[in-house]
Amino acid sequence: MQLNLFAYGTLKRGQRNHERFCQGLDMAQEATVRGRLYELPYGFPALVVSEADVLGSGIANYLTDVKIQNYTQAGPQGSLLGWDAICGELFTFNDPEERLPAFDDLEGFRPGEKSLYKRVLVPVTLSETNKALPAWVYVAESPSGIYLPCARWPAT
Image 1 (cartoon, rainbow, N blue to C red):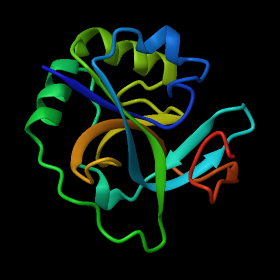
Image 2: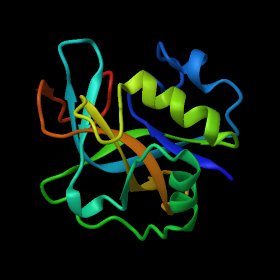
Image 3: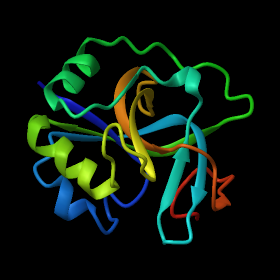
Image 4: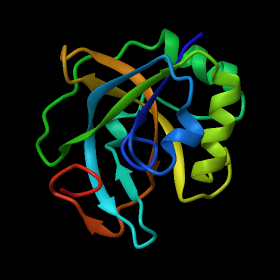
């Protein structure tokens, strides 16, 4: 089974957590997700997505999460009205049982507990083909920090 993960912050290629957490990835592709991006005072970003885009929420059973992702259809994203096309990368891994717990730990996500981020399944659009795929992404519950209208972190 393969794991799709959308990275928009420190996991992206060239950022501080990429080498440690993303070695051995199968594929990396430029992609976008509909949302709003914020710069937190801690030196990393937070993404907010529309509840209408959430296809599923992460649980502690990693194999179930990956099965849900692999059997979920993601159609094209709707209008960007009120939302931005957040630039990032879609990573594909073939070892989800090892990767998801490590990513959850990095992001401080604990299913069923209050945390800064939650892991949700959303449609991600590949930049090269405009094809939409379901992928897991870590999102904030509510907007905070400095809004980044450029829809890219770090802001350029």
